[in-house]
Image (cartoon, rainbow, N blue to C red; front, side, top):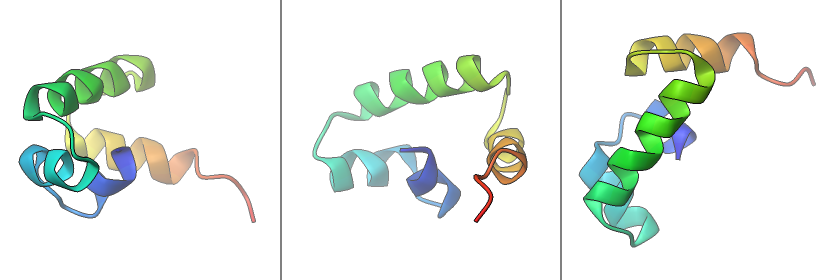
Length: 55
């Protein structure tokens, strides 16, 4: 889900792609933010870049 957000999809677009409700996506995003210690999409992108597995 975080990768879909990183591609610029809205919550509704993510919900449509995953065939779940908008509210489910919103709740999961809130949980992702909490677990990653971020407050915004921008901070999440930066967190993802910094924590990307080394190839």
